[in-house]
Length: 127
Image (cartoon, rainbow, N blue to C red; front, side):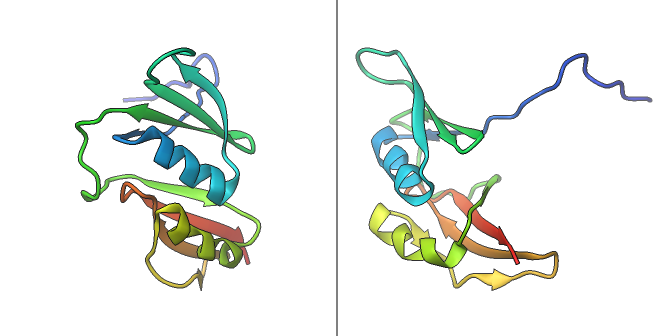
């Protein structure tokens, strides 16, 4: 079986389903400077918020019934300038630092954190 290349370039936008859009928007904005670039609908109760982190996008979708803190099967990896400088921001923004940053053999300094909903996030920088 051979795979064929797609006709047009594809992009991937991670989307987090959350019971509290405002809390996650504030976490990612305060931690890595994520800025809102779109919301649906523009007026009234919001269902979707699109955040931009440099050239990347992260979506947030509202669902009050979704449980938080359950084990996740996805990990967001966010490249930052200084991993260690951001760790003190995590807890005040409602997240959790899972341990100190470590230098990895593949040439990155990595800190494992969780956002306020318990989603796994790696903050990374080149060593």
